Amino acid sequence: MKPAVKTGLRALYYGMAAAILLFVVGSSWLTWQANEFLNTSPESPGREVVIDIPPGSSFDSVARTLLSKGLITDFKKFRMLGRWKEKLGAVKAGEFLLNTNWKPQQILDVITSGQAMLHKLFIPEGLTWWQIGHLVEDSGLASFESFEKAVHNKALLTKFNIPFDNAEGFLFPNTYLLPRPRAKDAEPIVRSMLSAFWRHVGDKLWPTGPPSPDQLARVVILASMVEKETGADVERERIAGVFANRIRKRMLLQCDPTVIYGLGTAFDGNLTRSHLKDKSNPYNSYALGGLPPGPICSPGLRSLESAATPEQHSLLYFVAKGDGTHQFSSSLKEHNLAVKKFQLHR
Image (cartoon, rainbow, N blue to C red; front, side, top):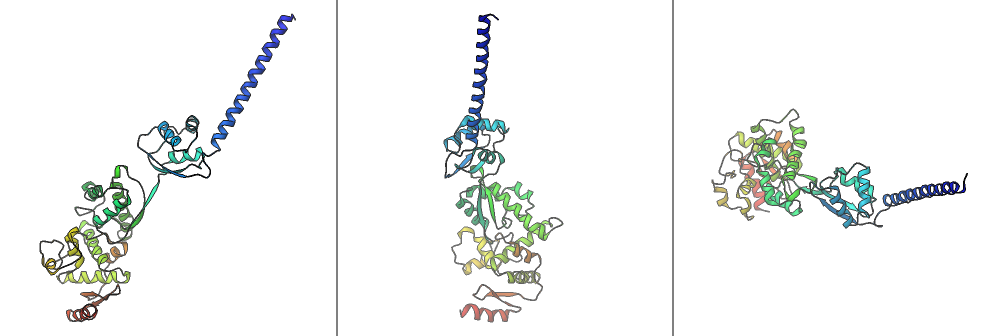
């Protein structure tokens, strides 16, 4: 073989070897970089960071937010991870609680799984819809105005079989874990409360399906009165029985909480004789017969159960004893003696 040919082959051989070596080194370096990115968190120890992803956000815009918040260290590599996992179009909207100590894969999993941050909202028994609305506003989740609008939403009332012009009585008392609604809109929160009513109450009291509108209205109104009259579980069926007996005998119910509800937010804490005589108040059970036109609060499950199955007895009166319980009587004479004992002499 001629020297020139040997020299050319030798150069080709070394060139190919160098190219292979560069490819191997380059691949190893890229692999090392990828592993370094995937297995290293931005900070240690980390810190919690909340990000809010608006609906319709692109993967790139979210990745840039993550980079600016110190949750990832490299935009391009995070995007490559998203492409490799086929998650570029899977980013979810919502509020997410992340941590700078998390590795990129965990960050990607959370923002594409829809596991939005949840907020605790506790609603106790016996509150009116406007008291609940103020609790919601105080929580920072939604505005009172949007809550008021939602509880009067006719479409929602129809969907949840509510036979009144608002959702009073059906905003089920419970502890809720809720994602933050967009634009402080309370409708998703109200939906959750109405769903909870039928999930907890409907399945227990009416397992075969919703009752008639009249029966449903009667039970919820009566339950709301029981809820406002006593906090003692052992008395709930008995008090429901007293109201049932008075209705049957066409007696006035004479329930202070109904009068107070009718006064609304104007009530200053002082229930007067003029309030009890005011027939313009449709909730005045001292002046108007029968049940009030609607619930006066959102009752708990025990009050709803007692209203559905009142205790059978001959009692017609009760008066607070001052210890959280009541003295019950069958006659006005017995009742007056009980009032003298527990109220006038207290």
